[in-house]
Amino acid sequence: MFENLTERLSNTLRHITGQARLSEENVQEAMREVRMALLEADVALPVVKDFVEAVKLRAVGQEVSKSLSPGQMFVKIVKDELERVMGERNEKLNLVTAPPAVILLAGLQGAGKTTSAAKLARYLKEKEKKSVLLVSADVYRPAAIKQLEVLAHEVGVSFFPSSADQRPVDIAKAAIDAARIKFHDVVIIDTAGRLHIDVAMMDEIKALHAAVNPIETLFVVDAMTGQDAANTAKSFSDALPLTGVILTKADADTRGGAALSVRHITGKPIKFIGVGEKTVALDPFHPDRIASRILGMGDILSLIEEAETKLDKDKAEKLAKKIKKGKGFDLEDLRDQLQQMKNMGGISSMLDKLPGMGNLTQMAQAQVDTKQFSRMEAIIGSMTPAERRDPELLNGSRKRRITVGSGTDIQDLNRLLKQHKQMQKMMKKMTQKGGLANMMRGLGGAAGAGRGFPGR
Image (cartoon, rainbow, N blue to C red; front, side, top):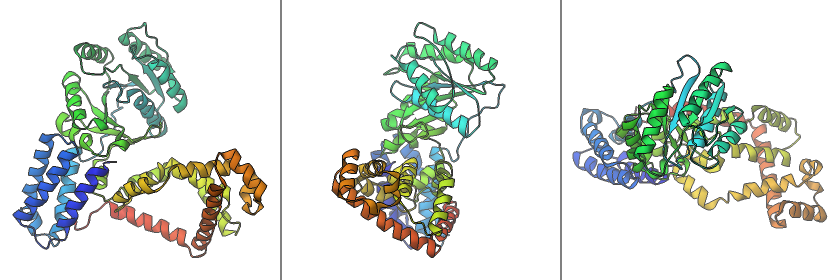
């Protein structure tokens, strides 16, 4: 996420961090580079101008000259200003109303409204413990209603049926009435999008908004459209009383222009950020954490939160006890670890959140064959339970059966067995020397350090 911007800014700021003193001249030079980096990231020009002026004003003032480490203080100012541009803090959904709280999603076609509706429903159900009803008022796009019904079933929330011959206002009103009767806490209304902004579209969404009076009106926008995302958000903001933004497809956005422009141009907070296609891939937007990631400082807090929610603690404890008893790390355990890493978004997602690892993310994507993990899972899945527990059973005929069953070859299987042996040795050493406990303590320390900043 935002790799191009991270690389440019990291290189620029690395040069200035070591400066013993900051002059107007070297600040000016650094800000020229920062300005170019932001423009190349497709950040809107008014945002770039405001950002550069704000940093310059603080960097050549008393704030830096009195600091013991001016270079680090300059980086801190850049981070502070990035946070300010994006909104300074996470702004939660306002659900304080007589139930059901109505959330209306608006946006252009293809921005990801329907998927975001399901993601938001899942988030509210699992994190906020709310009873949610999903309804589609998109009577134009073929199969839009069916798509939302399937997603509602997938995330385990209620769905209110509608059809293409109904009026969007009638659908929404009926859904809210049904939610009252069945005591749902929240109703999420998915609306129709268009390929461009037009008068008819705006009139329809205005009428729908007036009829249901939602407590939250969220604009769903594709991060990959860059500063166009901010301009489109402005058009919707002029037509509707938006309360916030959901930024989708951020995991595929290497630039970061939308994240840095939307709040400044619309005055509306980014409340959620979509980071993948799966229905779990929706995170609250934390400007301070995003600023840290943009500057290559990582995001330990988000990594820990993901680990707490997505890793199976029972399995981890059972594995630790098993290894302590000397039973070893078998192939079933390896498959569990691969699946857990996948739940965390894969190796690239994890590297992206570790301090100083931002530049390694691209290298990991280029050098690590992510399909290799799927092949490893397929190979283990083609083994019998006995073979997973004891790989020494694997003779020539068994190996042939496994590779045919998994669609792989003998080299893939032998590579897996070699990697498994190496992991077995590593696990044994970590258990004997208390390495695992030390590693977890280190992660906790890093989390504490992540809240501050060098030179603060």
